[in-house]
Image (cartoon, rainbow, N blue to C red; front, top):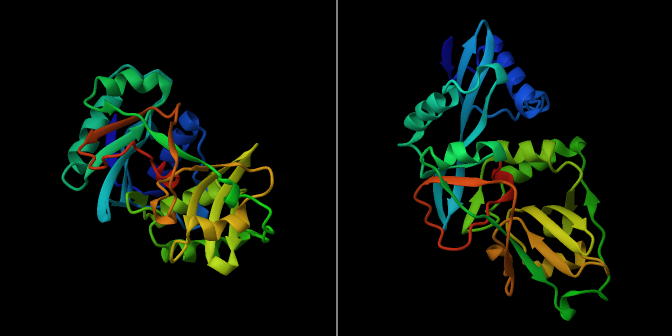
Length: 287
């Protein structure tokens, strides 16, 4: 068995890594690589055997804004071991090496665990935490009858336009926002390609999705963040009476909202988190 790290320039090892991630998580990085948004800040710690990647942990170094200050956070991601090599302590050893490598360079570590891995992280020095979404019920003066203004749907043929907008964006929140171009572009390519719209009048890209009477807003990309009142004529219709924010909407001037616990992602934390509010992870921080 061989151990390798920081090997992205080695095409053979990279190919073996991609195969492992697809076998375990059904995640194919080909589109990300071909589009030019692969991020070397995604650092692998991997065991190989006979040319095959068999166990892996990655540290994704994510630049963020927390309480108005620039911070570097470490997300533990890409974790997994092939079934025939499990229960041998391989992931435990890789996690130990990864944290030792990253601990002096980052504010804190966080991760989102699969259900079957909860006990592993519970016993490994990570603290389970709750995470939340923010919901606001629209008031009568925020709803139609004003005339809804048209939106431009953005497809992946506008990838260069979207990337340039991300590069010059202002933080969506001063409480907690991710500022990673390539991690945001991962979500543009993989999780948000059907939910991106451009508001020309506000020079704003909005990632959103209507779910019955609720409009989920995943991200806003703008050089200067518009207020919610400026956005409303473009984004709501007569059937929407509730907004759901997947980030802190402090920059939008949003008031009178509720924190709703978000289930199913099993977040864990290691280190000191200085956010003194119920924790809302920005949508585009998930790696």
